Length: 109
Image 1 (cartoon, rainbow, N blue to C red):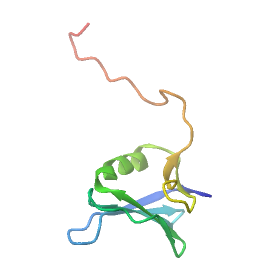
Image 2 (tube, rainbow, N blue to C red; image 1 turned 30 degrees about the vertical axis):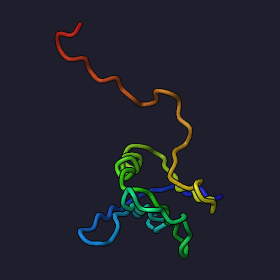
Image 3 (cartoon, rainbow, N blue to C red; image 1 turned 90 degrees about the vertical axis):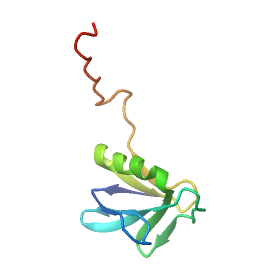
């Protein structure tokens, strides 16, 4: 199992037939891609291509993956080589960590 820190990402949302993807980097080196296919598409198995991991998701998961990369730290690329056990992940966090309650609207007390 490989757990590699993600230090940067690059978004590619093409206007043609190229599937949307997010390239993952570790200290300037590309380490993998999150590739997003149509929601009704059968996803191919995750794979190692050269020294990069290709992980396949449906488009409905695009915003969630981007949100995780934008808002969590640290984030890691996990590749086990087994189907259904690969992805991006964070370390364990305490419940409620860093989440502020939204302010109450005026006059609601």
